[in-house]
Length: 203
Image (cartoon, rainbow, N blue to C red; front, side, top):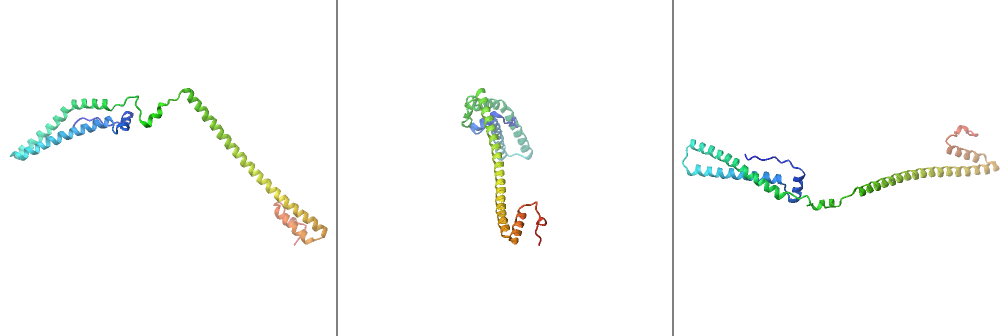
């Protein structure tokens, strides 16, 4: 019954809530609800007392109820100006001056100038370039590692082939045909483009 503005929140309400535990809007709504509850409960208690103490018939009881309801509406309407004055006092009490900061907002005291901001941007750009160079260097080193691994594999294969060739040479000097055949087949197995049909020896 009492006119109450809806809660809309906002920055000031949020800041007041962080500082006091409640905001001005919330408190004004709570005060109106409390006043309306007090008016209703007081008038209804009076109505109950009159119905119990007076010898009323049903018509009188109905008239009493209607009269009490009208009295409640009248009290609520007349409470409007007083509640407006209370609203103003609440706003004055809970209004946080612009120079007051919450502990978690004290970091905002350190304002950053344009020069400092530009310097920070340059530092960020420099760090970004360092990260990019680091990534490029890592990719290059990875490629070098792969290339070195390939070279090592080739060298290992060449070393084994040289050993087999040495063995072939010794076998030729000894005219050991079976050993020459086995060595040749081993070489072909390590070289993918040679086939068994290319051997000079048949089964």
